[in-house]
Image (cartoon, rainbow, N blue to C red):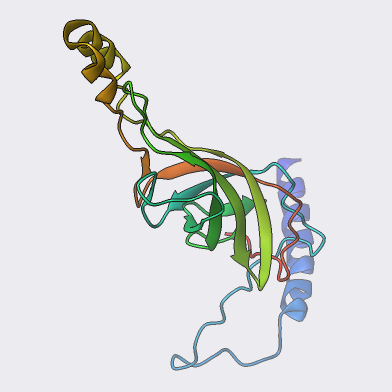
Length: 192
């Protein structure tokens, strides 16, 4: 019985072989000098959208400091990491953008540190401004309030002349932010 089953299977496979041959292309194979075709990247559907609130990482490009910044000043930033959509790059790393100085204050008497409040405004990509928000940047300045109080107790009024430090966002400082609106790429990104 096993010999009959084996013969039947071989006969069935032999009958299918010509079908496989007939399904092949009749084109001649490429010569060794012809380039091998590269598969086209699979694109995300055109209706794909990077949603509002998508977290991003930006990088400050130029120094922003309480020494020179005034309210309303715009400063350059860039996208520090690509924004991905379904595993494909929707907004590439290095995309330029702008931030804005929202509030600033010089270091004060009594050791009070300077104040610098920054906001992320937009990225510039595909000829459009993509609004961004919720900039979170860890800055610090020297708080000399304790030294001022100790000096005031020991020396008197001269302790009030002790000032705090300036606030500075140095070039290369990274911060988190979010997209402030949905973004639909003009050209759907290719999957990687």
